[in-house]
Amino acid sequence: MKNCMVLTTVPNDKQAKLIIQNLFDSRLAACIQSMPIESHYVWEGELCCSKEILLIIKTNQSCYPDIEGKITDLHEYDVPQIVQVPFSDGLSPYLEWIKASVDV
Image 1 (tube, rainbow, N blue to C red):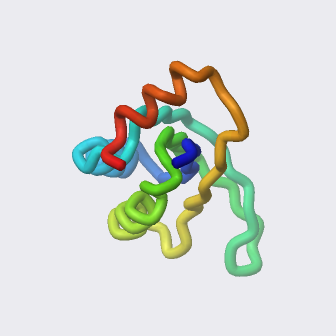
Image 2: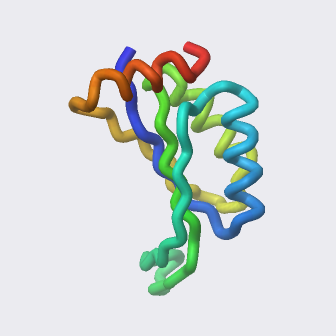
């Protein structure tokens, strides 16, 4: 199976920690990076700007359906960003570490 990143945004640290802990407890992620961002978007016809936390989840493509389900169940947003970005290539030992770290 191929490795990938799953990207999602959350409104606060509490939600980020909840999702991160849940994904690690389920062995669905090898690494999760979090960083504060500012998102600009149109929602219900209005231009919005929100401070959010971006989660970058390193995993395997076979884990994506479970990750999407867990994030959807735990997320506060009506329509959360949950997207998968496949890796086209990478450092071989790093990619092997990801495979070994998730429960595939």
